[in-house]
Image (tube, rainbow, N blue to C red):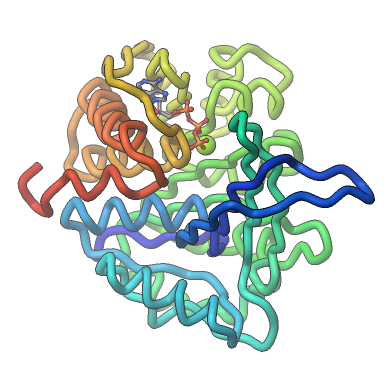
Length: 298
Ligand SMILES: Nc1ncnc2c1ncn2[C@@H]1O[C@H](COP(=O)(O)OP(=O)(O)OP(=O)(O)O)[C@@H](O)[C@H]1O
Ligand SMILES: [Mg+2]
C-alpha cells in the first residue's frame, strides 16, 4: 500500500449569500454548494487519482454527512475501512461567501477531534509507505492531536506533514514531537513564519536541524521553495488563469508526494507539485482539477 492520510474529514457547505451578517443582522442564501473536504483527504484523493493505493484514518458521525464523506472517499478509490464511525456530528465547514467574494468560515469539528490512539489499527497503518498528516481543530478536545504525536513515533515509513494555519498557530514548540518525526514538511510561507518566528528560509533550516529531511514551502503564485538543507530551490508556478485557489496547497502536496514516492529528485517533485496545483486553481473546488488527470498516465 502506498499512502495513508490522517486528518480532519469535513463537509464543506458553501453558502453564496447577499452579505455576511453581523450580530443581530439577517442575510439570505442565494445558492448552496456541498463538497467533501478536509486537507488530508483532498491530498489522498489526488494521490489515489494519480494511481496510488491509498487509505485513511479519521472519524465521522453516524449521520447523513458521515455517509456522504465515506461514500465520497470510496468514490476516489480510497480504502475507508479504518475510518471510524461514532455517535455525534460529522465535521462541517460552513463557508459564507458574499457578493464581493469575501469569506467567513465557521468550522464544526464534530467527532474529528476525538480520535484516541487505541482506536487506530497500527498493523493496518504499517502497511503503507507514507503517512500524510494535516491538522485537527482540537480546541475542546486535544485527543486527535495527541494521537498523531503517538502515531508518528510508531510509524516507520515516510511521514509528510502539512500543518495548515490551525497547527502553525500553535508554534513550533507545541508541534515539535510531530516535526522531529517528519520526513517531508509542507507548510506555506506564512505558516512557516508564524510557526517559527523566522523567515521561511531560516525556518526551513530550523526544522531541518530538528530532523526533517525535506522542507517544501508553498509560495502561492510564486510557486514553491524546496530544500534538504544542502540544495535550495525556488521553483516558479505555472502561468495559468486562476479561478479559485481553494485546495491548491492540498493538490500541490499530492503532486509533490507522488513524485517523491517515485524517487524523483527535489526539483522534479516541486515542479510536479506546482503542476497538479495549477490544475486545481483553474477550476472551482478543491478536487475538480484532479479530474483533468487520468489515473496512471502521469
Ligand atoms: N496564482 C497562481 N498561479 C499558479 N499557481 C498557483 C497560484 N496560486 C497557487 N498556485 C499553486 O498552488 C500551490 C499552493 O498554493 P499556496 O501557496 O496558496 O498554498 P496554501 O496556502 O497551502 O493553499 P491552501 O489554502 O490550499 O492550503 C503553489 O505552490 C502553486 O504551485
Ligand atoms: Mg495549505
